[in-house]
Length: 480
Ligand code: AMP
Ligand code: MG
Image 1 (spheres, helix red, strand yellow):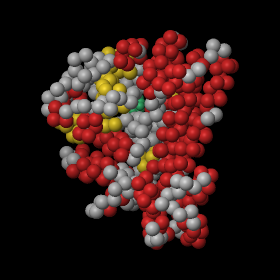
Image 2 (cartoon, rainbow, N blue to C red):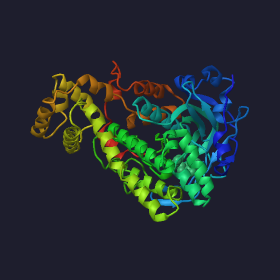
Image 3 (cartoon, rainbow, N blue to C red):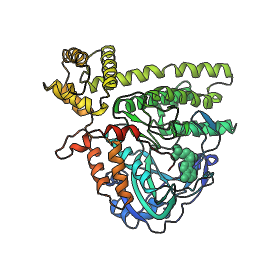
Image 4 (cartoon, helix red, strand yellow):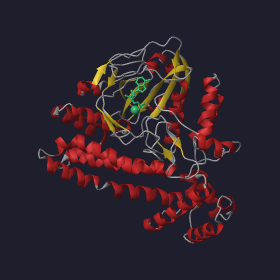
């Protein structure tokens, strides 16, 4: 067994790749392996656990592979940084999965690269297991995302505020092309490079654009649609990404770079968890407008491909950006219709009802996730659990009566509303135990969130929000 890795990105776009190798790992130890994903990729899990472990660390390079750090730029919290790139990550190469799809195999925490700036190039066990559990939970929830293949402890200490055990995450993505990749290519002023990048992105993610009258505008339109749908899905599951810089926004429409992300508990659009987001730029409720802002930065990078005449190019970009809101509203209302069990009710009625419910959730500080499961019980005739959450009962009863009159479908609701999400206190508990060498809580959490819609006996504590005091003071950290 080995892995057949291609070097498509490096060959197509050598200007955006620096051939590089991972740092050695003194004492590798496999902490988590996604055997189902390995199988989908046509990889043998036993081989990965044994002779193939080095591939998951980047210390063994399969024949024909050309590991590289990728160059990109990005707007970070609104300010443009012309050169970011993979400071502690490597693209090992592309592989074709058993469904025939091309996937990137990528490592995070594999050592310093020429893009490391002041960083040590390393990652700690906790944050890598965090990305593992949250990205896999997102996948189980049906949200497009990069996937986690494995976390391997390196045996190398990492120095943050304290000494922590180091690890490498092996992740899989449709690609690692970001808005920031285009910003980097555009900033070189090399139009041929930008064209090659756009053609690479079209071939890989949006082949429908190839035959369009204006293929680069069609690429832009496809990314707008994909990102509008993605952020709608985030909103529907209460996900707060936390660091929506343009270098963390993909062209494929997958969620990427799980740093300070977390799931909202009590519904509040101003929910922020990231310790570095003190202005709330990336708060839950801002995510759709930030997505649009990032897409406008993408448009700026693409302008030279839209038209030679700048005014004409800007007109095309604006016309495309205009479609974002409609894509988003449709995706959100369709998702809400399912969450409320009202798939056949006109979308404007659904949107109105959902917005009213959310206002009441906010007023009564109701847990967003469990509300919808309690609501399906109300559809089956047992309204007390959900009624018990509200302070203004008269207002909620009024809402409930109007909603029930539309004959909601509880079975549909239970298929789309999760019981189990990676709640902050459970993630922290699992990571703290893992830091002490105990992986049981991590595995138990993975089991719960891996089948989020299927309520199981004995998992009650995975369905409950954390204590309010815990949630109120909970902060997540970036770049750790
Ligand atoms: P992120 O916050 O993970 O999206 O990373 C933003 C940028 O910082 C990227 O260019 C990363 O490669 C880089 N970076 C983050 N942490 C480190 C680190 N420990 N060493 C080197 N580069 C890093
Ligand atoms: Mg990033």
